[in-house]
Image (cartoon, rainbow, N blue to C red; front, side):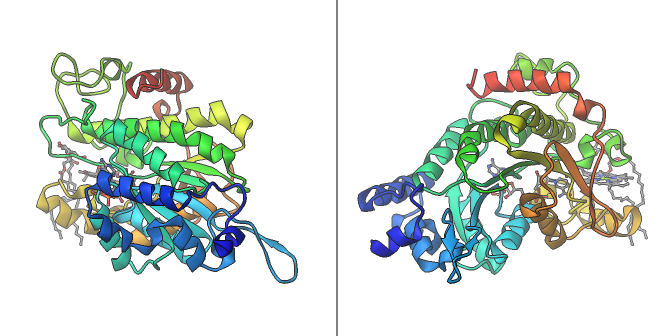
Length: 388
Ligand code: LMG
Ligand code: NDP
Ligand code: PMR
């Protein structure tokens, strides 16, 4: 107990023994994973984590070295969809530095545990917490669980996404919204809004909120002009609740469903949301808001629903013809830079990388940078997630 008190900062509210058990129990019930199994993951308990790692690596604690110099405490970053692809690669890259404790916010606990182990992430460098972005209740529950775990929040990465290129009919989230926009945009919108408070409370020098964008949502590029093109129109479908039956499942209100367009539309929403957050909160809070196109990571699970021929040809096509290909490891490094590189603190930026893997501020398409559309998207989204 004394050791625990010494290692944890006073600002942290660490649950007492009974409460911590309750947190784990709740989480276990929520995940429907036997409690025993959960407790075997050493990084789940904040207290165990704090005791197990060196003082300099304690999430939330500022520590002094022998010569009295203060060192930066370990940061805590939440990454959604860290069970595969970019999210997993970034989680690994950040955890490996020792400067970050990664909260892997994922819908499949066991898959994530296996993925983290398979990637060679050190036990104690991450915590897995359940989050299903296809359910707004789950988003709220995640925020609750995260707060009860007693960690500070220094950086949030909204990375998870689904892509349904071959779907001819829409599927829906627990709340009845079309799945691609529901998961990629609305789930993240609620998560980001709720966790803004936590970011604001953090004493970490550079707090960041990052939302993944993409080249395919930007019609000012060649890739953004491959049909079907992204376009939100006047947002009438979104305003109608993206229900499908007596309205449209598409944001622009079109009658026919197009899974590839729904994904690209959701990416416009992600990029507009980042800019609206920047306009509303950057000055007041000092939080850095950013988006990025990490490169074409043609080998990830994102393309799992595409036809086998596409999955076979897409990586060599991107490698040898467009030369837009990046490996998962390289893309992970890029995202890790946006989370923690001291030179990437500018807010409101959409980052991209050139052929030498140097970052630069990229231009968004007209629609993906339209402030009026961003405001309207914000207001409709607030209603759909129950914030207004
Ligand atoms: C829409 O179609 C769908 O309608 C929608 O449902 C959704 O899936 C959406 O964005 C997803 O796509 C869009 C797309 C469908 O249509 C087009 O883009 C039309 C243009 C097609 C023109 C092809 C140009 C080919 C360029 C050369 C490529 C050669 C690659 C070989 C690499 C080898 C390197 C050593 O398109 C598709 O779904 C398929 C697209 C697949 C992209 C990968 C490119 C493969 C092209 C197929 C060529 C086959 C040949 C093989 C050759 C071998 C050569 C040595
Ligand atoms: P992956 O499919 O590998 O990873 C997506 C992650 O999202 C997985 O961990 C997946 O979980 C998770 N996820 C999906 N649905 C939900 C849900 N309902 N709740 C919680 N998590 C969910 O794809 P990528 O790594 O390629 O994609 C990561 C991000 O990068 C996306 O935002 C994508 O738009 C963006 N991006 C990707 C590009 C690429 O070329 N791949 C290019 C540009 C942007 P599970 O493992 O359980 O399925
Ligand atoms: Mg695209 C010029 C370069 C370029 C780049 C950087 C991408 C990225 N793509 C490019 C070109 C082309 N693509 C061309 C010329 C074609 C016609 C053959 C083409 C096709 C294509 C398809 C069918 N590309 C795709 C698809 C998908 O299904 C992917 C998609 O749109 O997912 C939404 C995709 C992508 N191309 C990219 C990137 C990054 C993707 C994945 C999209 C994303 O994650 O946002």
